[in-house]
Image 1 (cartoon, rainbow, N blue to C red):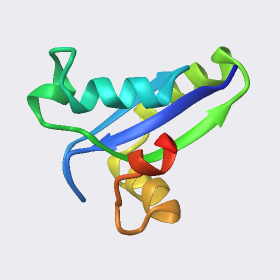
Image 2 (image 1 turned 180 degrees about the horizontal axis):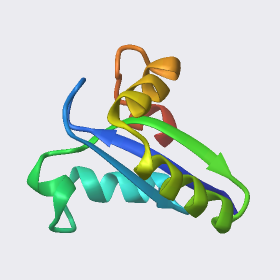
Image 3 (image 1 turned 90 degrees about the vertical axis):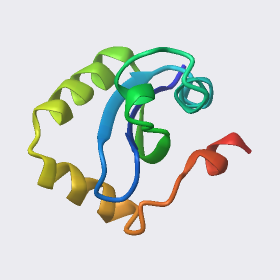
Image 4 (image 1 turned 30 degrees about the vertical axis):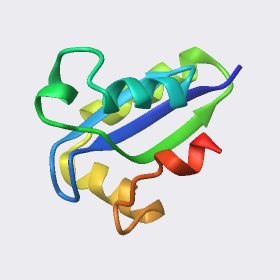
Length: 95
């Protein structure tokens, strides 16, 4: 089973959210329809801008915790290294 660490954004240079899941398509869909009240639904954070895949949950959770401690500038550099336009990657993972 694969595990995913992901970053969502409201827009380029907007609010960001870091999460971990074992079903990225379902989890991003839940964020998009605002299925769970909270930070992402309150600030309309629905754009998948970055993700990494891991083979085990411990590695994925460790990476998520590491990224949450990073400065915002480092997170933005991480996103822009793979996705300079901050495009929504959700459609690309649904196929």
